[in-house]
Amino acid sequence: MTQSTMIHHSPAWQRLAAHATEMRDVHLKSLFAEYPGRSARFTRRGVGLTLDLSKHRWRDETLAMLLELAREADLERAIARLQDGERVNLSEDRPALHTALRLPPEASLVVEGEDVVPDVHETLARMQAMVEKCHAGQWRGATGRPITDVVNLGVGGSDLGPLMVTHALADYRPREVHQVDIHFASTMDGSQLADYLTRFNPATTLFVLSSKSFTTIDTLSNASTARDWLMTRLADGDQDTEMSELVMRQHFIGVSAKPEKMSEWGIDPRHQLRFWEWVGGRYSLWGAIGLPIALAVGMDNFRELLAGAHDMDRHFRETPLEDNLPVLLALAGIWNVNFLDVRAHSILPYDGRLEYFASYLEQLEMESNGKSVTNSGEITPYSTCPVLWGQLGPNAQHAFYQLLHQGTQAVECDFIAPVRRYDRVEDPATRAHLKAQHRLTLANCVAQSRVLMLGDEALPSDVPRPSHKRYRGNQPSTTLLLDRLTPRSLGALIALYEHKVFVQATLWDINPFDQWGVELGKQIASETEQILASRRGAETLDDSSRGLLDVVWQAQDGT
Image (cartoon, rainbow, N blue to C red; front, side):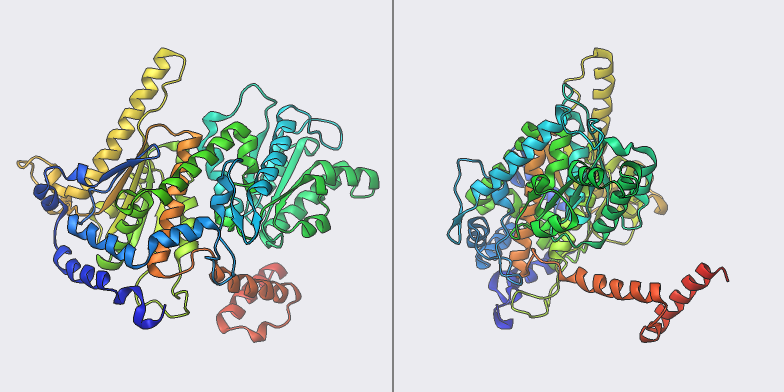
């Protein structure tokens, strides 16, 4: 796309820009007064989700113009190209086929002459064999004892996705199998891993090394420490060759797109799981990277997670744009970021099981769309991804909601909650108490979005409103309701946000599937580590960096 054909020069963008000058000073309370049936006009249902977009500062004509903008960007064709396996990752010249990971076994998807579905399901079958072996108590460590603890060593997409889903679906942990506890270590400083190594029994601990490139320094540093710990405790510090081989075979699983690197590190080929270059790390929980999820909840529930995502994939491709959940969610964001100057976005789940969902979306959205160069290499003359953060809604109410309600920043918020919970708790008294707590949580979810919308207007007219208690309202928000939080509904929810990211990237003409912005920092860190270790070459650094290294060296020398 050349400068003259960039999206901000399109007729729909120009109409939206003019329209925004009329809408910036319109308060949400006025919009609700204009439209007595506003909620129904801006609410859509599909794939087990209810999406309420009525609390955005837009009218029917706004949405119509945004849909026209999507059509001018040829969005429907872009969706088809994504799911058909065309090379939509332009900077790396390859497809982005995370949707293929959740295709059913009877499907066929021929990409550049090869049907990818059989390989996907062969990997799932290998995963299932590993999971069933652990759940039967038959995966044994080097001393013959059953594995009881599995530690996933990964970072970024190899950590955040499995961690988030494993926590969210804890209620679905199978109870009739040999219990295996799942843990995660991602930090390169070793603090998470150090805690596990002081508490776990090396004879019953299995490590999963998850790294697409199998070169990630964070993961390999933790892996080397784990290997040394096992060898010291079980193989006489690597002196017992036979036991050393047994340790490597029975205590490590590798997940990577680089089988040769896994073998070189010492992982038995029988205990390697593959994923492909056409799967981005932050889109990879649906395949072998999801092994910790399957170990936690069982393979049947993992397949339900995939089925829910596939449901959303079909909805995304087959549903007209005006009723398409990912498209509408994305267009609301485009309207806020590019036309109303709302550059911050908060994710607020009202369910403790979604504790890590905001962290997961931080990577998904900001690593994907935190770009300032178009696909043709032009600097974007418009804003792209907003700053995204979040926390469990009930906890956030006691943390940063003060800024949302009375601060000076405009913030878009996503409220997420399941409608039903605790129906299956057996004890009647306990069930009644827990359902009452869930009702309280839902009340807070609805009330907070209402106050963000209306401000003082949510109060009776005769209530005094001193200046320090004023609420301006007019903060835009989305509310997403799930019937229940299940493996299938969670799969749909995650895929909803994946596709939202793609829609926004398509309209912004950026590539959501690379992450070159993180590479330079890694390179400079490697060079700096060499200087830090050798104490040579500091003169090549800037004055601040030299000063900081001097502080480190003086502390190490005790001066």
